[in-house]
Each structure stands twice: as C-alpha cells, then as structure tokens.
Length: 214
Image 1 (cartoon, rainbow, N blue to C red):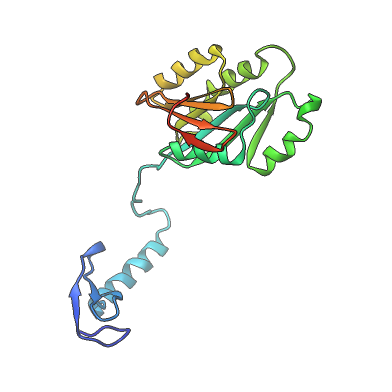
Image 2: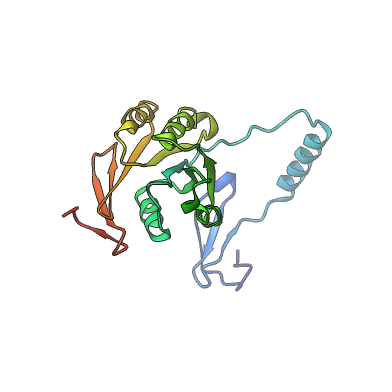
C-alpha cells in the first residue's frame, strides 16, 4: 500500500476508528484510511438504501456530555465592567462565558448610553424600576429559575457586593452550580470561587490582576 498523496510506501498503522484501519505516511504525514473492499461497499450501499426505505427506523445516535457554559449576572447600576475586566472574569471560568445579563433601571439618565454599549458587547438587558435593592431583587427572581432557562449552565458569576445576595448564592450552590462572587471595593475586584474558596483580585484602574487586595 502507498500513500495516496506522495505515493510513498513508508506508512504505518495509526489506530482503528469506526472499524476501519487508519494509516499515517511517514514522508508527508498525511492520514488516510484503508480502502473499502467491494463487499464492504456493497454492504454499505445496501444499508443506506434500507435506511431510506424505512424512514421510521432511526440509527442510534451517539450522545456526548454537554461541555457546559458560564453565565454572568451584573448589577450594572453599581458595577460597570470594562471589556478587560470582563475578560479577566471569563478567564477564571472552566466553561465559556456565553450568557451575560445586566440588571439596571434604564430610565436613569446616567445610564442613557450604557445600554447601547452593553448590547454591542452581547449583554441581555433587563429593566428594573427604581428603588433600593430593585436590581438585586430582580436578579434573585431571575436566577431562581436559571437551570430551567439555561440547562447547560455550570458556573455563575454574581457581580454584587450586597449581602442580600448571600442567600441567592447559597441557593445556586445547592443546585450544584459553582458560584463566583464578584465584589468591588476601592476599584479592586475580589472574585471568590465558592467551590474551592480561592479568591483572585483585579485592579480596575491598572486593568491587571494583582496578588492581593493590599
């Protein structure tokens, strides 16, 4: 047998996936499969025709475990995350940060331009009325059914320094979700991993990770 690309006979076996022998050429590094015999081609053609003739007979599907996603819940009224800060938070997650949700009173004049910026960055914008703890209350109500809305969620970034959300974070942990509690003090973010207890710090002014709050 020769390599179909460079016709070199310097080939070696390289696994046997799906019942077919795979080879690799030592000369050009191309991988290729052993050609099917006429009997195999005939059997494959017959199976294809049978599957077309019997549409209700479905071949068993291979299932793979979902890779999972991470979700960010932000109180945009009290904590505005820059792009670099958001990237730092995403780097702490074991899963891709695919869902970002901002809770804010969009009637607030000081937030008039924030909605367009966050929307361009892929945020889902949720309006809350004015009042103390209004954004946190809506966040808790929304997060109570987070597993029903996003069944692949594995990690949640909760961005708020309010102690009111301690109960909410505990509830998420009881649902076997890993919670990253994101707090801000003196332009420094403290991110605590509820699963490991590790805390990482990030300076919003320097836009870089720092070894400790001090």
